Image (cartoon, rainbow, N blue to C red; front, top):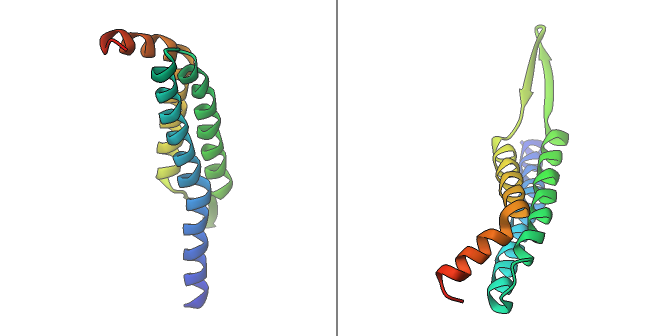
Length: 116
């Protein structure tokens, strides 16, 4: 019983360090860049932060691949994985790519709409 409790704690620690912390850093960086763009009337910070968000998404995806476990039972390959890594990494890569390509246009349109 003690071994399974340790493995659960290790899994939670790993998920915290390799999923939630990078996702939180990306979200905070995006918020700061949007704030900076509106404060300084520029359109570059949000576009540049898109690249960082892509890197964070790739890191989360990489950690998921490393954490996947495989087992062969009676000739069948059994894979254990956590879908949350795949969902968050895909979301970050899509959002980061969109911001990297169109962040300046998005911010300029929002600045015009909100008359900032």
